[in-house]
Length: 318
Length: 273
Image 1 (cartoon, each protein chain N blue to C red):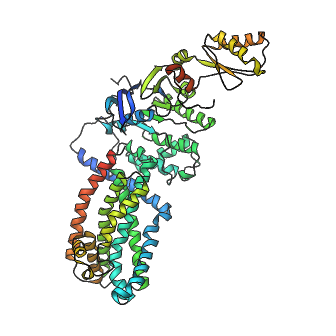
Image 2: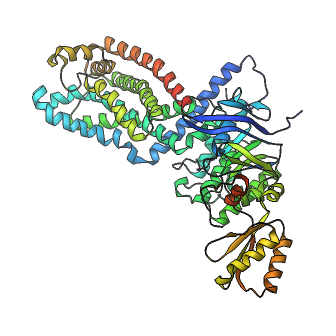
Image 3: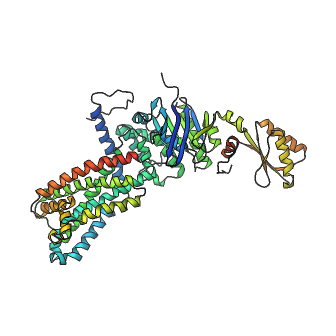
């Protein structure tokens, strides 16, 4: 008799004065899956999460977690969710262990249970050694992990992760990804907001692309890649004078126009790896030497350009 | 009474539900009060306003005004010390508002808000936790006062009663700072606005100079100012003299402030996104 969706938001509208943060956004995920919410800064991701987590009331639309309405029964929803905000909200004057024990006590665990739960989570998150150090001495990555642990004290059914890896270096990001995968293996449903297609691709069962407070595309990573060109080929000829020639070859194979990337390279979206092989073959046949030839996922900016015709206004180095 | 109920979200409201809920609010508030106390003890620089500052005030008042007002610093210390206890604890309450504002800005409260605890628990916890600051302030003040030559003329029980009464008033007034802390955008703004509240309350009194030397309009304010009544009550309890009016005024006005300010503060906290 469980509800079809672990969480569900329908037509959410939220205005802050003159600004419309959410303009009819709808998000949902079946139990035990990861929904990636992909969008640039200011797209409304955090506002949507705050409504689902009962921290904000929507102006219109409805939202429910495990079938429980977030506006009518916020207290019941709070028993089902864990929230990890964009900026780690741990108490810096308390130790890692004290942070988690306090949350355990607030979740009505007995003192002994709260301590055991905290110790277990600290061990799971590689923080056992730092358990009795103040959180103010933690590195950025450790703080994120403590924050994640804090949202898991109550064994939530649904976890909201609002840009959990923003500002982390790639190795630390992998750590967080591993944690998310473990949660999903345990049956938890995750809503993950991110600015990186790569991250959504690595973790999410389905991706909603949001812009200006609404969903502009939704599908699996594979479906999304089909729309925007699954991957991008970058060609940097050894002789910059032959750039136009290289671009023409790439464009002919991809069947899409090539775009310049910097002064001496060109990129083109392709549908599959076969196109990449074909480009390599033709460059070779033309006797065109290259200093760089790569295949990568499109950036959020490229996804946006394809879907909306406008840039996000923020470029991230690949 | 230590049975811990495991959270059963789907359980319908049982007859004992209401009582169980109050019980939970108390438990959560105490857990959060523990957090406040830990934080306070770990950042001793935050205790300057209840340790060094009152000592400085005593020195300034006693040695600057003592001779002029009372004829001697010793006489004046007797007059001043019970009253300045009230000023000290009221000033000490400002930090509650400033700290709450900082917590909200830092996002620590987002976590509390996403937990199934009463909306008022984080506020009650902070106010309760800061009681330790008042106790410390009074201990410092009495210790310093005794070192300078202050002597209570009554006994240990009335002196303790004076301490309790002033802490009670500070507890009630601190809800005004909580409210200000919820309404202001910046911690600095909290401090500024709190001073505007505090100034007429603490200085519109007979703290530094006898009431009959004041102009009529000021005397009118002093005779209705609850803080002045608390100061008079503290004097009575520590030096002997009438206490009934002062104590009753303090208790009644404290309860009224609490009844008005606490719900306003909680409402402001709910409204703040």
